[in-house]
Image 1 (spheres, helix red, strand yellow):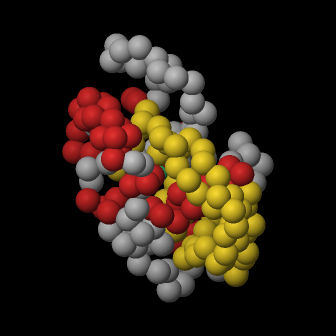
Image 2: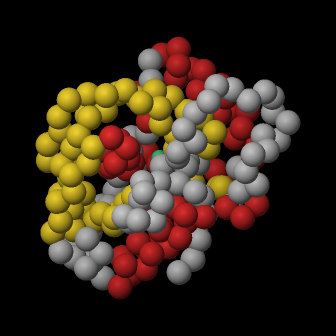
Length: 196
Ligand SMILES: [Zn+2]
């Protein structure tokens, strides 16, 4: 088990379509375990394979602080209900947040770490996180949902922060000195601090 480097906005892998996993092999299980380790090291609530430079259609989520870790292989949203707007952040666009409209609840079908079919029903934060991770598996990022002005503001903020990540790589031990903003300016509005 190991903590992997996280790819940040600008790395083309974040815009690529992933490949469905044909069989849940030991390699896939190792990837899942490493992704859980990486997500926890980054204090995130979800992580998708492209964020660690991989092209397998695999994601992990855990919105309950370790109580309910879910590994998802080849996940698909099979139904969604209602809409809700909430703030999102992304481990691949650290410190940038924006309001995104999502389905309020979803049902996701996937394979688990053992290759068994599972159905996950999510509401609230789990619903949001599932949709965010499945988007990653299709090259989509939360900033794509922002209106033109908010998106421009998010990208402007990112352009100031992105120097911290040479070659679009976020190496966790060094960057996880939380609470310091590198002197980049004032703290902005309160946010949930949940990145995925
Ligand atoms: Zn993300």
